[in-house]
Image 1 (cartoon, rainbow, N blue to C red):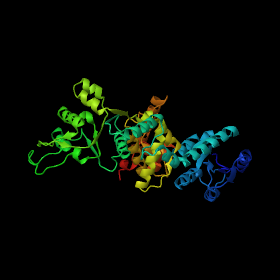
Image 2: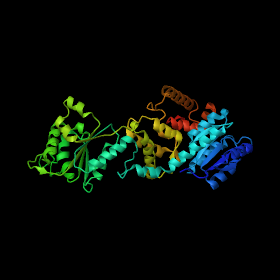
Image 3: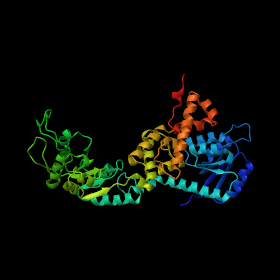
Image 4: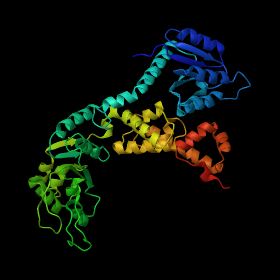
Length: 459
């Protein structure tokens, strides 16, 4: 549903311009105008507008400093308001407008206005506002009653359906996919949706334990089986009795242990290390790997008969770059979790930061996205995540038609900053004056390139 009578605050020191915009936008909008910084702040907090059209300069009145609008913008961003801020600017002030976008503004509009284009921009801002207001509802719907899995892409919906079907059986499942795609999360989900949910889910990474200890970890050992075995110890198989055993990185399992696993899948019995007694168990096996098991079979590293025993039902996890519709949902999901965990008042992701997130290839998949958002939340200074918080702009995984040009420009920008830092020994005022930028822009640039000006001070 469309918002009824959305409020727009027009903040510009040109009273005639404000009146013209009020007349041009009066159909369908509640228009509030303000012509001085203190009036802008007063009306912002009292009216709580959906959109603010903000002139960054209040230059006609000598009582107000240059770029007064930029400090107002930062104040509004930090005030935890949901509104979208559109910058009013002239062609000669484009550097200032870009600084505002980096600080979290939604977009900018150039003077003189094309009223039809402005109306399109306003509708887009309102649409984004509505979408964001539905985020919580959308997340609940996309969970599809399947625990905390977030995803609405077609590939994930097919996986959800497969999870529902396989959870009602005891079939062995093989989950494949790149590292970080969520293989263990899906394995837990299958367990939680099955009739084994009240029993243990036991996970073991077959590649993380030395080969000499892995057999004991999996199958347990009898007292006296080897030096140091002072007691009888149950292994992961027995600990998972009536539940699920998740064997991660199954391709790393040594051939000798592949034989013992195959025997269990055939007769559901194990023997502890140093033991002679067959122990009957009721355990479901779910395995996962990021390797091509068919290639491993060809190379003699994996048993073909075990592969077919494990791959009764196969689930292939798509890489995050193939889940375009899920990237924004996941980013906002992690933002909510970490903002609460670290007690940070962060309410959203700026449009430019979100664009970077969507363009990035995510070679580390969901795990990398989770870690990037965690780091960004910890380091963020505003109440929205900005491009500089994400540490993505310098990464060559950002894609687009101008990729090589962007990379060259970023390298040049970083080198200019480094030279200025050395030349002025980290003194911010001198660097800003030298580079002809304001301090706010300079701080954003330093944070964007992960440069600490304090390291360059000599005293």
